[in-house]
Image (cartoon, rainbow, N blue to C red; front, side):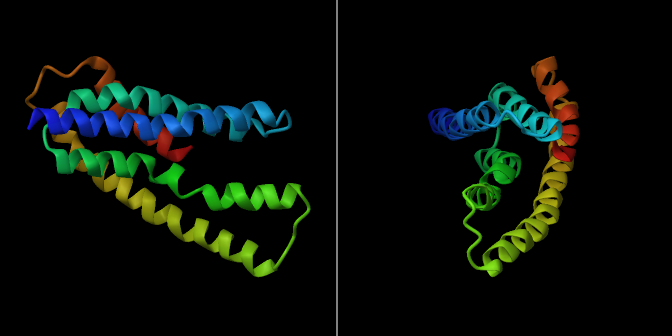
Length: 153
């Protein structure tokens, strides 16, 4: 049903836009941030904003839309432990070393899993983007081709 799909896209857009202010605040609040981290945040910001138009173009199956959105936002959803760990470190709260170690392991294990999910989704999306449908805008094709670059960042 089109109304359900439109409501789902609207919900995804609201969720994604919740990350944008957090990333901008992080860039503005830390003038000593490494250029590579600033680049990571800007690429993520670009993907989130650009992705809103992308979903409007590719939504044909609600379940696949959820999978695409999930794969694209899983990076942001799972890096909160790093943010909390950095806040504790900056506040000189060193606490139990096991918490820092657990955070590092979680991050190290989750990244390859998320990357695998991303690549599987990216490959499955290829026929939709580059296939028989010509109504999709050039911007959606460009974003699709840009996603591996964003994934690497």
